[in-house]
Every structure is written in structure tokens, then in C-alpha cells.
Length: 437
Ligand code: GDP
Image (tube, rainbow, N blue to C red; front, side, top):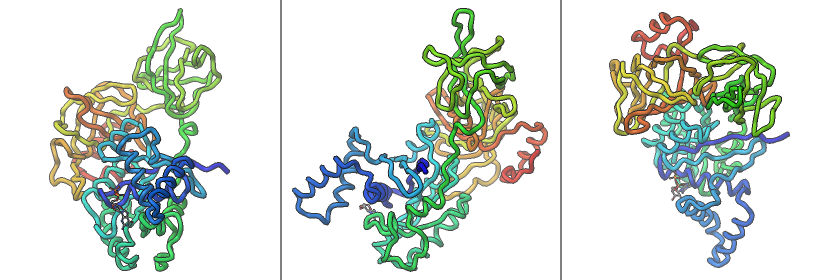
């Protein structure tokens, strides 16, 4: 059986032990390249002190990270019994948001590192909030530095009590917690003898138990983003990037949001024709009849085509120097489309540190704010839920000074407008539990 691939993001307050944990996972899973280890061994032999082995390894990793050396060792994949894990390293949460929203990386699960001796801090909550906002459903909590507290059960229980309300507020109430010491390796790759009171699995076994790989993009319904259209001889070639699913020659496709249907006559790539192409491929399409194709459109099969909603609800993060107001028209970039959308409503504003919602109904989000908005595309636009099709469910907002905000799509509304208005008419949080319209 081949191992499935999982992307993990390690989050938590500064100095709570994220890098140490990553180093530990790589070291104990024997994932550091042999040559690198030999270099380290040689240095150790020179220093003549074996007890520094692990600390030295970490220093090396840290230096590499700072120096930006070519071997990006922190992102070396490591194996467990079930999966191959790759860590998405995020030095800062801004960097992480950017990576996630631009699609540079996609995490399947998060590991929240909380130091048992330092307790829940601002970034503990802020990072967990961001990970939730970015649509990551699976979270594991590693309660670290248990060695500093003599591996006491009571200290772990205290942390659990403090973490529970935070996790609950975010909708991660089911998240499982494991007491560890990244530094000594207790309960990371192997079960600790020093915490026999803990009957659960080690961190790596817990990850194996809990984390489910996401469905392969190729097994999903077809979505292809139109990037460019050009004429070659008397043929029109539609250059498209296949985001999910499989595109097959001879099948009928629909171009949305216009809804024109045609058959795929040829699929071209680098001068040759293909019978089919799959997610990740960029191809040139020739259809059996003339259509009005343009950049920004999305190709699907008629029975499961891209949505062009009347409105959608998004979670947005506003960057420095910007505000987003009710009734304002925003220019957004979503997939290959550039479109204008009106802010119909600022549904709520959330303080990412205290996890509280602003009282009353906010009219705007200011720099640094996170909130939920209802947006109405001013021109037809394909929009999907981020959890269904990440590439078509995330967007950036362009302002005069560049990117001013970014968001992910939580809900799309294709049902009747009246129903949508009812849901959003001052019902605050209740849209979450709305019945199907
Ligand atoms: P990060 O900022 O979250 O990446 O934290 P680091 O991994 O850089 O760790 C911060 C400090 O905590 C370093 O001095 C580590 O040696 C120390 N540290 C990390 N994990 C442990 C642990 O399990 N036990 C102890 N005693 N110290 C730890």
C-alpha cells in the first residue's frame, strides 16, 4: 500500500517550540539526508560532546532557515506508518495567509503547539483562528515542554481546561491533545515512559489516527480556468488550466458563467493532441462550435458545472492601510477572473485574539480586522466554496496601493434572492445553520 501525502502546518505562539518539534519529527523519523547527518556527526566529533547531538541538529536547521540555504531541510518530508507528511513552514502568520491564499501551499491539517509552562498566549489563539478561517478542519494540539513541569498529569489537565474554551469558540472542540516534550522527544515519535498516566497515542500515531488525506484533485468534478484565448489559422484555441478533475476529448462541456455548451474536439499540449488531461495540466482546447470564450471563465461538465452565484459570503482579512465598507464596490481577483463585487453587508467583525464578535452590526472592516461579509458580483462570476474548490473559493481584493484584503468563500447563494435576504436580514450568526433554500 502506498503512503498518502499530508501537508501539515505547525502553528503556535512564538517560542512555544514549533521549530524544535519539527526538528524532532525529522530527526526521529530519520528523514535528514545521510550526507547532512554526516556533516553534523563530523562537527559533533570535533566538539567531542555527544549530549549536544540534538541541540546541534536544531541549531543547524535554524541556521539554514535563517540563511535561506538551498537545502530547505525544514521542509523535508517525513514518514509514519500511514502517511508521508510535509511541513508547511510559516515563519510568520502573514506569510502563512499569503501562502494559503495564493495557493502556494495547501494544508490538510494543523498542529497547534502550546507550551505547558507558558500557557495559552495571543498567538496561540490568533493562529488557531487563522487556520480555522483558512478552512483547515483537522487540528491536533501538542502540549509541549512537559519536561519543564516534571511530566505532571495535573499540569496537562490544567492546560486542557484552559484550551478547551478556546478550541470550542473556534469549532475545534473535538481536537485531541497530546502531552509532549519536543526537546526530549517524549510522546513525539514514541510513547513516553515518563508520562504513563497518559493512555493516548504519541503525536505521530495521533496524526495517523486523526488526519485524513484530502481527496485527490483528479477525483473531483471538472473545473478548468480559462487563461487565454487565441486564434490559430481559422481555429480558436482556449488555453485553460485544469484545477480539478479530468477533461476528456469528445465530451460536452459548459463554459460558465455564460453557460455556452460545446463539445471538446481537440486537447492540445506542446504541439501534440491528447485524449484526456487532468488536474494540474495546462492545455489548449479546440471546441466543435464557436463560443464566446474569455479569460476568467470556468469550464465544467453540464451535470456538475461551476457556480455563478447571485451573492456569496466570505471571511475576509483586511491588510494594513485599508478599510472595506458596506456598499463599497471592490475589485477582486478570483481564479483567472477580475471582477467587481459590491459589499452587501458586513455580517460580523471578529477580534482574532479574544475571539469575540463586535457588538452591533459593523459597517466596515478596518486594517487588521477579520470579518464575514456578503458580496454581490456586479458582473456574472464563477465562485465556489473554498472547502469544495480552493482555487475558485479564495480571492484577493485589489486597491490603489496593491492587495488590500484577502478572503475565502464560505457560502455561495444560487437560490432565490429573497431567501438570501431573509437569511441575512439581521440574523447575525444564524446563516451557519440555515436550512437549504
Ligand atoms: P518556536 O518559536 O515556536 O519555533 O520555538 P523554538 O522551537 O525556537 O523553541 C523556543 C525555545 O524553547 C528554545 O530555546 C527551545 O530549546 C525551547 N524548547 C522547545 N521545546 C522544548 C521542550 O519540549 N522542552 C524544553 N525544556 N524546552 C523546549
